Image (tube, rainbow, N blue to C red):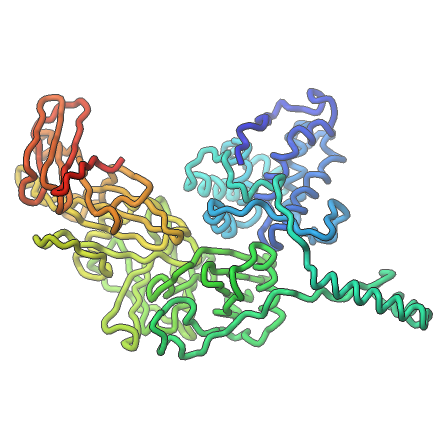
Length: 604
């Protein structure tokens, strides 16, 4: 959805200029609906949010001609819309708009997943702060002012949270919203056909009853809560979730979320589990009959965790915030990618539900590789809060988990919180051992792996809930000139749940200094399907002499380096690294050739 094609509203766009308050609303209707849709909490499914967004805008009509927020026209309409969207009312009972017989949902797409997950973690005022900056191009101060006029109690904090999300998505503006956030372009599907059939049958039965004995029916209809005809409670058509045997994980040859038993102290609360299943059905129907993973009370909220084999759904019903649903990809989970799920996150940190095959859990500081891990209690599979989350492009707190010997002997691995429901698996690929064989990724728990991750963590190509695994591949080591130490060359890769990913080349300086990221590329660079790479880096020696450093992976047999002062075309030396002294200040070109004749250029 490209909002750049819509007229960009400004503070001077008044009702007088456009002719009438109605003209203001019509001209900016789509943008206002989008503002409302992003702001609304995702606790009632897409249909309810679409209807609520349109209702919030249409209710702004009676007052848009007045002087609100110091201006009439669009600024006043915007404030009124935000006030409506921030007001937690049951929109389903609203007088308009009304939709009968069909359900509305915005166009689904993979691009929605990250924004859905990130927005779901924010309260509505912060979502409004994001919407104002992303869609209307306001800066943080301007957004805070609008939020204050809209009645937000903490406008500055809400604008700041919205700005942080926008920046992490590539701000300062993000006008190209995913299609799933265009509440003016919707798809239709039949409503609850089974429920409508039951209601029709009930209506027929009532008609027969009225014919046979009108007085009792009239009395019963008047004995309700003041309505002339009390509607029966709606029956949910969502299938009851399945439950796996408690010991399935001990016998199956494929571990993952599908092998989890159902846990929690609310497993017998069928009403809660039904609401959770229905909420998922209304938001984006599951691909199969859901499996129940957890139903329990945690930190004052009721939490239900479900999976359909491709996605995770977490339903939370808290007294203060109301119900909320978060969806996250989780297809083809395994012993590590299916080892932990975030049940709850607040100011104290994240609380995880761990897989039944986890025998021991601990936390560790990724930036302190020599510091011992700290044991993490997990009674009933639920951990204590783990403080912190991903920030400034760096992975968040690290869990160090150990599998039960029934699964694998001495199997320890690291998971890092990237802000989603499932933490990312951290792995490490060491440099070549001199053989012709590739070295596969391994668990990042050795002393060498921990040191490399301590240096390279903040050079990862991306962090976010869509990331399933982060791998640090140390493809070369280079002795620096003038005995300045050893430089490690790395390619860090982020693999997503859907099979896509990205990579970043980086250099890890001597003495444990923080890595410097050199370049970034989407695609399959530095994956198992693209195992050759080359990189370049400008470095200045302690005495001030400049160098162009070059490094390549194990199958490179020739290096071609062109600088403003010279051109080198030579067989790759042992270690496949070069140090070109005084390369000049102009542009350089580096190319590598493998034994098979494949020509490589640095990741960019």
